[in-house]
Image (cartoon, rainbow, N blue to C red; front, side):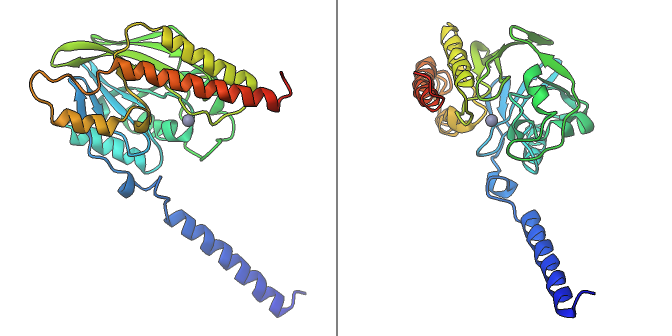
Length: 285
Ligand SMILES: [Zn+2]
């Protein structure tokens, strides 16, 4: 039989464990906390709005046949997206498609809610759909139902809006990037969303495919606007500040092909230095 003291110790141990779980469930990290992460949603182009959080972005593209959402965020941050859509005067039930840039929790985590609550169709690459069958890498999320797989060169037409897709692997095996048109007071510009930028992955081959992806983006001749899936990858908030002070005749703060090209150059240099390290670590000269 268990002694009384031992029993007490066991009960105390269980209570402490339960308490620890309770406190981690209650206290959100600043990254996951909607109160910390809230950004008032805002319009950037005639047909494009920011509905994301501080550290991770979501964008709403408006067509004449409904809405397209880029990335769903995750956890309670998905509420920011849904509330943001409503605050802007749109109805989340009109979100026809959710384009998931890659299958990390911060982009895919709320996709299931859009399927269940608003009947949205979720689009992702085959390689990243496969990631959803495996254990989540950084943080758990509700697995979306497998809807549409997007191939390199694929398109999506919704009313008069057309998206052109590229599969740009590296950050994940099937990063999805999108080219689309934004309008500034009716004037069209080609915008691009590079779906996975960070170098937080490993392996020589993956690094090589990242480099290949960036080099493919450098071949695109007509990109004028960088629409990033983390605001820091395109100084979204800084540019928006400038945009709010815009006077007649001023250029649009997001139309900036020079910094798009310069940014790709930096991504390429960083990836090349990573490749050098990866090759050394793998014993390849
Ligand atoms: Zn990621």
